[in-house]
Image (tube, rainbow, N blue to C red):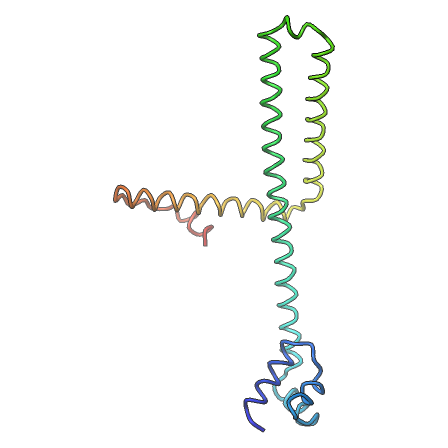
Length: 179
């Protein structure tokens, strides 16, 4: 038998889901020969290792995707929270400046009720996000944020170097985290 057929059979078995018999039939190799090659080359162990790595990779990819989605939700939640605080301060300021306009209790009550509902919805959203996120998710999000910040710093440093010819040395801890 040619070494090419043996290599193809091994590749198909280790990285696929086909049985030895199916691969042998497709490549016109006897089941006995396939069995001998499989035992001698320890293909079963290789297949198990490959499947474990593939499963780990799929899980990590799914976790990373979830962490990115949660990070975006958390960022949106933080923006909403900031906007609500700003709106509450503006409302308070308007009340001070235009006390005559807000003397009408009905108008004041509606505004306060709307702001209260928005704040409650924001808090519910934040609690939902916090409940979904595990400690591992939070760590990944923090690492993603730090990595993004470092990339931005690196880019700024490169721009500064190009603009002024000044060499800026990064802190070793920052470089290690970037890697």
